[in-house]
Image (cartoon, rainbow, N blue to C red; front, side, top):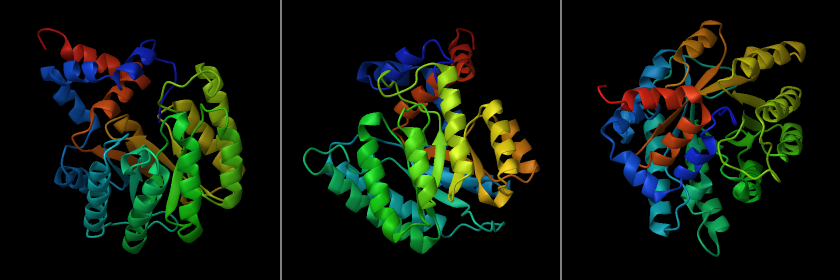
Length: 323
């Protein structure tokens, strides 16, 4: 859910998102936590559930991400799995005041690198086995699971795991595809033919020119090509964008296919463009809000600053002396 290369500081910020030194500096700034609260629904499950209840009360769908990624500690990977299992159990108890025909109002978003994908040796298998536990619990609870995209080096492993899990859980499992990757148009075509549920975003990592489009106009063009494929396919497109042009394009494509309001959804990040979220819900569109929580918020937060100049300026104004 990002806008690529609209922020001239984007490469530096993306590098900072993986820098322990930058993390120490930024997290010590008094203003940081206050700004983080705009984008992150608290550090605890209880805080996240409070935000989720409020969103459901305002006719939003939700997807919940327990923040963290790239673990190389088996114990930490197990901790993340346990947190997702507890979260799914809690979600199953929440009242949902509306019943969409095709979609599930509740979803969890999972980064496979947090499940052990990066562990040396058998990380792929560890992540698959951990993911299967979460998917089985989610299916029993009536909750969707969408596997987030990370940097391009993980894509083959992630999509392999997704396809393996979809064999037994085709309705529960979906995944994210990033339009800035050159391969994504082909991936969209394959998953659309399979009838998969796909969240299409622009991309949020600093990728090399060899694998990714770098200029905004090229990313936008790729997004539109991919969106056209998904809207014309057999699956359920999830249009993850804050870009007004892409939101309008999705509406026009849905009308031309035709694809009804029950057959696709928009997705936006927690705390970003709330007025546009209100507008889409008021029009009767399906709108899902991506709700992150947890104490491993640093990388997520810095990527939000990197992807939109408005986010960065909001942070800089708040951090200015006298504020």
